[in-house]
View (cartoon, rainbow, N blue to C red):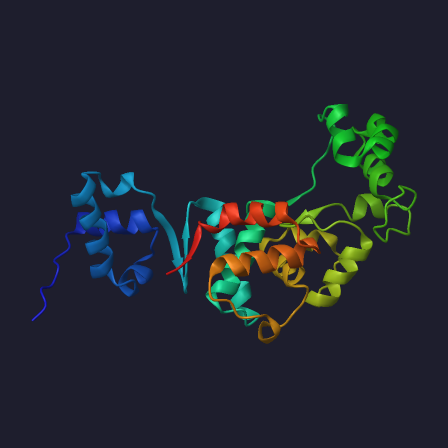
Length: 262
């Protein structure tokens, strides 16, 4: 006959806080095994459970560590959107999350004004030609973005109408920029991002757009199967970068330890 663990209210609060669990998740999470893990480690090294790196969330089959607050909420939105799209393999999810982490750190935002940005930084971001040509306009957002992204900017973003540069600035988790990219994501999501580009500032829309971008719109069934998460991360890093970029792979590898199979 197995021995039952009796958990005090104080211990319950500790576990919920440590694992960021709701009451419902707490009841589903297999608390006995969690307690055995936590308090056995406490005995081993004499540290309190909260001294160890905590599990921020357990969502489905992916265990997330090292994130909290808005970033953790955005990760859970990513997972929810992947599940809706049929991407339920935890190794696929870990690969996509690792790439998203290195691309955006799960911050969904609209490209900000460069008014307070030093001129040399602008030149570094936009290149010598565009940077030098546009830096004097940096405190006028409409003129500046038209200069660096617009139809006469010299970059191929599909911006073919006056005002497109400022209208289709970087948005979302992967900073989608330019009319052509907005049109592509519009086709993939079924949303009219040309008429409503600000939709990409919504974390849920941004997550869906990023997943479609990272997978190149492939269906879950057409994604290859992997035996370990490193292979998955490598695949999605290559797919996103469009090449076998060692730098893209390594940056994604640096993030993958935050995601494991629960």
